[in-house]
Image (cartoon, rainbow, N blue to C red; front, side, top):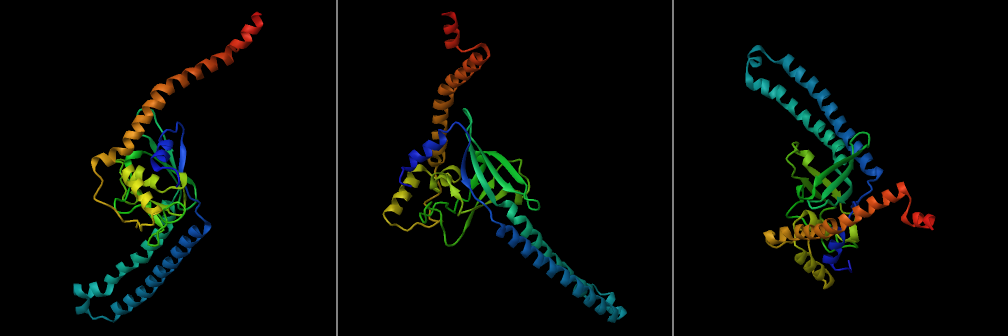
Length: 282
């Protein structure tokens, strides 16, 4: 984090090809632990159903006709059946949780428009690779939780939480649980600086992030939830303006020349290089 953050971020947005800005290798312990927890709660649910089915049947068989006509008796006898859904719900959630853990985030620049961001994760059951691509402005970090804490090599360690969330604001995302993605703080961040995520997904201004970085150097204590007032419009447009400026310089000017070079190169391959033609004419 010795490089000025503004320069670090600028080097990212000037990229002309996709670049991985986050990488996390989920260990087998995560999947094994979630599977074990799911089996535990599944056994709780089965045990509860077995015990309560016999218990409610015994109570029903011993009841008189007047009690069987009372709705209160029905509620007391069969109402607790609803509790059986709790362990089964927890068991299903335990299996689903690892599938929301992001293993890679890729920044994809585009000419004269908002860059894309690709999130990669694994499916819940077979571990298949799943990818989701969204415009950068449709993925956001929780406003109250900062990725950058100033602690650790990448400045993202936090004793209170070992993960942070990104959520999908796209209108095409309908499911509630499909909106949220879990990122582990022990993952590898681009440039070894967690402020990149606060700038791209949190709307934090570069000036504020530079100030937080200097505060860490001076030994000031920064917490993950330390924040000034909500970012103003100028701060929100900070990264957007840098991206737009670099897109114009990178694609509108250099992009045309690079494209022309590629076309000329392909033509030379097909018809022979100008140097070869000149040699043959001599």
